[in-house]
Image (cartoon, rainbow, N blue to C red; front, side, top):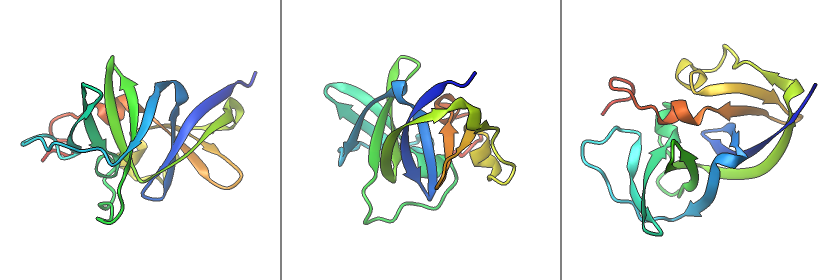
Length: 148
């Protein structure tokens, strides 16, 4: 039996991603960032979100995509992960979508290996392929993987 899944969507480097809407706390823009010396290269910095320190992760770097143009300010999608807030820096935000579980497919082999390991699966929509992002894997920054 098919069920409806609800995703918050965004774009990173031409890809269309979605995360479960229940993980998203808010979307921000132009947040002041404090660099963290010797941090993992995907960590953009730390930010103060109403008194709470939040780590910002650049999804372009995490996905091994080209750097964002300097004149393009990223959006921050603040998600809750393992009882802490993390900000995912994305290129553009999309909509909240309801998607049928009937159209779920495993990640395609044509995706770059570094991106494929971070994807739960895909949903072929009429105009675009929606990639469901595994936020736990995105935030698991093992030594040796994208290290500084």
